[in-house]
Image (tube, rainbow, N blue to C red; front, side, top):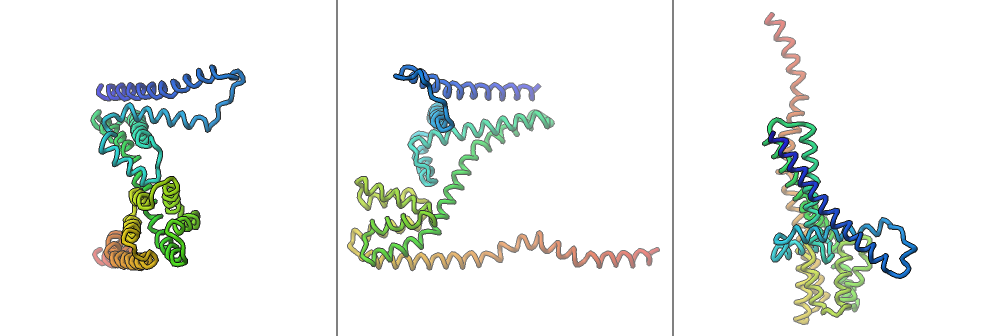
Length: 311
């Protein structure tokens, strides 16, 4: 009886959410079709393509996030989530609402999948079924957060790999007589294929400068967008050098040498941690197999000799 109640409530929840999403999507589509009918020359009609459905889905997710995320993505939480999305390379204006809607849809899909799995396998007890459904819904709710963290980590790794080469190229450009803006433009143009993440961030910084922002403001925004401490330190150093009138070439060269030293120390640290990390697989996987290979013939020979002697 309890399992039937759970299935009924889950089905009603899925049906209600599906009806709400359908109303949002088809309501926008009906409104757009009425506007198209009132437009001049609407009798010809245009076929709906795959690309035209993407804005409709986006608007549906935005409205779903607006309605379900009131109070959950406001204030400080919205600013934190917005900063994470920017660090992941997602710069859309309504990215927060879409992300929250995706979390809700993901939780719904995982919950429906869990309900289907419970109906097929029929676990013993309604409490176990309820725990499975709730756990699956929570997993779907937090899955977008894990994907977002993974994307931020990938972009951080890409920037860390490309930053030493970028600083070296900036040193060459500055010492050859170029300005910092020209050197950044050169780096963003040269690194499009090798390090696209870093090239994209530098290109955004250049466009902000061309739009009227000062170089210091544009570099500060770059430091806010970048999920890498080394790049933030570089921005701080460039701004301080500009304010104090220090030599940019010498400053960049010192920063490049310090960054190489830090990377060398990081490599030494990882090499020192390797024996400790290798101890667990050696003890639990390699040594038992090795002992089995060595002592199995001895045990077999011992049994063959001992049992005839006992008989």
